[in-house]
Length: 165
Image (cartoon, helix red, strand yellow):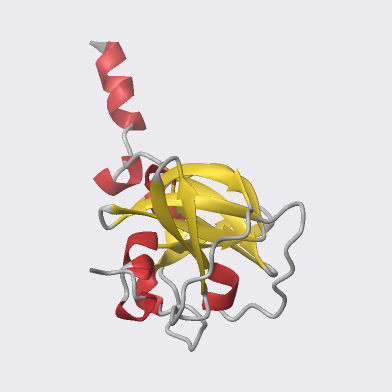
């Protein structure tokens, strides 16, 4: 009986406090660090120049053939109007499964996979930013890092992406 009582005291006051951490793949775009739900990530590949498509928006670099699947490649750096868009050894394409389709996004570099608990996520302030705030889940402050957590599904299926059917 004593065992049960002590366990009761350890239980957090609010149920939300015990919500499990969600895993986010973190990556860099310019000076900012972003996180996206790891469950949307299919694979991470080194950058390869895609085949350009006529009349595609500037941030859609083109398409690549990924084992028989034609995958549109979006340069998130252009999408978010990051100053520099150099392609180097660290540039990677993150292949995502969003809105029922496969899409590749080009990022400066991939950092790591982090488990972030819901209580560590703060709402994004309503400020003018390169990213529509509807696509931002929130901000996570970790030790010396500030992560912008993206709803990549919303971001990729926005009308301006031209990727929705």
